[in-house]
Length: 413
Image (tube, helix red, strand yellow):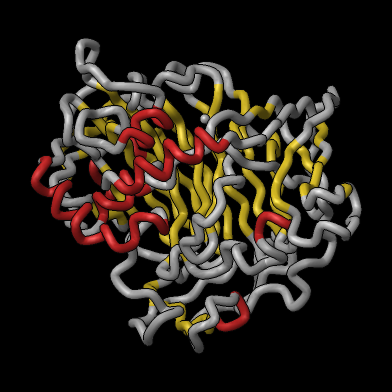
């Protein structure tokens, strides 16, 4: 599980023009015609990494990555600076559900990530900071847009570096749900203000990426180190992320996915040799997505012990993404969290949320300062204040100094 620093430098150089867009892509379908994406042509896929390297079928590893398998599953080990073990699926899904049972890596500045990402830089994230022993970050990006940093939010989770939890993303054309151990902690409607009424809503076929990297190592931008929790030392290395199993449901199975135009809209995606029957639990997912993607989407927040702090650096997931620029499979069998707002409602899900209620206030730029929508209120200052339930507490006021720190970090790349 060793990723050479030289390989990392090459990957960073290759994606430098897109650094502020958080991630890189080999071909962006919103800019030119690209090859069709290889799809998952079955409704379900699973990997039990406790069985060893045989579970690596349909996964590729970034250059320099070696995965060891033990009784706790796949081991993503960071033993020194420059290592960033990362794998990704060999296929895309078009709306679906991913469930990852895992344990995050410990260590100040060590970042563990689960990322869904598309060719046009739509993205849905789970991220864990090794020095944060009580929270996990949820985040999303649309078309690589990082013009604002008000999308990430942290949720409480019990000892994520010491205990296995199942982290789920349920993604349809109408909403995205982040779920911890069966409990929905966040729901993002398609038409939420944060998505710019759907413009920045993740809605194109995605691959699943998993890995960890050192955000606190020397050589990283100052803003990245600050976001990751501080400088990393290796006195207590190795720092290991464990993935026991992955279960994927593809709501629109197909052998290929084709972008019919450059809009990046879900209704521009053609499913080739696929079915049009979505999962029974999905919200009207089909080969072209829902014709009414914004239906039933409210502007309310639902979560579980949510809090926010300094703005997340847009480099956060790039650490994982940069390692997948050149993917080759390499396995070895061995022994044994920002600024975001939860715009959540349990609509369309039937999920039971925690009953305790604490007011959650999240301030984000209002897309229409004078408008008032269900579950939210708009002030004359152009700031939308959203209320939350299920024990959520969020406050996303961003200081100018914090944003300056992040901006300076970007410039140092």
